[in-house]
Image (cartoon, rainbow, N blue to C red; front, side, top):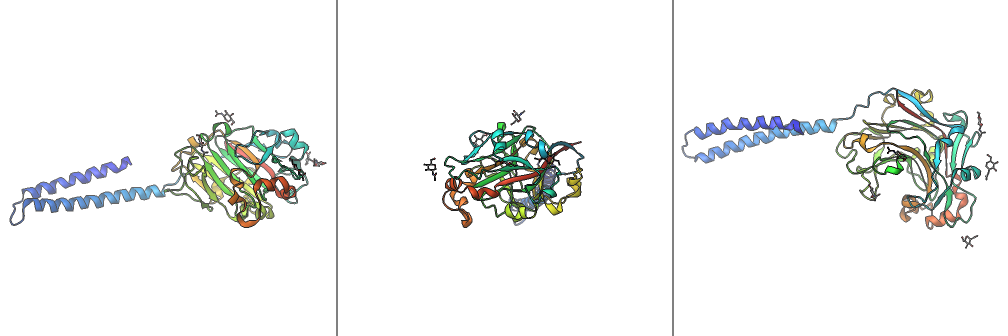
Length: 381
Ligand SMILES: *[C@@H]1O[C@H](CO)[C@@H](O)[C@H](O)[C@H]1NC(C)=O
Ligand SMILES: *[C@@H]1O[C@H](CO)[C@@H](O)[C@H](O)[C@H]1NC(C)=O
Ligand SMILES: *[C@@H]1O[C@H](CO)[C@@H](O)[C@H](O)[C@H]1NC(C)=O
Ligand SMILES: *[C@@H]1O[C@H](CO)[C@@H](O)[C@H](O)[C@H]1NC(C)=O
Ligand SMILES: *[C@@H]1O[C@H](CO)[C@@H](O)[C@H](O)[C@H]1NC(C)=O
């Protein structure tokens, strides 16, 4: 904005000589004020056109501005894989903050009931994951046929926190099915929404419309409303502020095969999240299209092409809205999103109420499990 002031002043002073000349010229049939008015009108019109051109140019340049996502040399910082995977998380056991019909169990219970386990054999596609020594599985209970107070599930939070970084998530199987609300996300639960929330992978119920990437923040963070972004996904909403539209966040929808049955049929793949002051980007790579530099642990996002979701640092100060993030993985049941009647019954695959379904349809949760080849977190070298 300050750059608009000098040209405006220059234009205004150029009006004065015309005015004084006209004022000094002799008047014949028209009153002097008439000439003065015409000249002033012309001068004002010229100024308006001139200022409009400058403003247009400045706005045009602004609309085209885009952060410099220059190459960062990334160095492996943390590995979450195989037998060490679950020891790097704490198990959340409190009442679900998003009002699900769920009991989040502690680590010993989850291990005893196989709700969390490391497997070398469970999935037929496990051998195609980036990790060669077992996959980490998080499941919903399928044994309780009368879960009248809610069904057992897990929610885990990484012990490590991150301000920035490149996060590689190898997903072999994504959970889906009536009443499920799974998510792989980052936040600082003790400072929400001040330190932001990044939902990298999230869907509900039958999950037939693909993955949704969403940010949630305090006031003053909009993405893509008036400014450029580069992504293959479809923007849903622009305001990330948690007070807008019941905390719907600023979301981007991926294609159908980025989550659920269609995703699993392809052997899943890799989600990559880059969190840096220039912006937040999320890529989804099908199993068959994982960049070689990810497998070789030398990832360089500047070579990966357009992201699925792009949240550039243009209408939102990313550095101040996103800090101290933990990695969270959970499978909620019903709750604020999946449990809404109109959402639960959408498409006709799920009937009755969400909590009735959770209580009685134990066997329907057989596909409600996450299977991970591992997570790898890189920091700037
Ligand atoms: C858990 O899985 C193991 C095999 O990995 C099996 O021996 C055990 O019976 C299972 N426990 C339950 C409660 O399903
Ligand atoms: C999986 O295989 C690795 C070796 O490849 C071994 O160290 C680990 O104990 C195995 N885990 C299970 C749960 O069998
Ligand atoms: C389910 O549990 C409720 C109480 O929690 C009980 O009243 C009901 O009889 C049980 N139903 C079955 C089929 O066991
Ligand atoms: C960082 O996050 C952790 C976990 O939410 C929290 O306990 C801690 O207080 C946070 N630290 C700061 C400096 O915000
Ligand atoms: C948004 O966050 C504020 C805390 O900063 C909280 O008081 C409010 O209830 C939140 N609103 C929603 C809809 O989550």
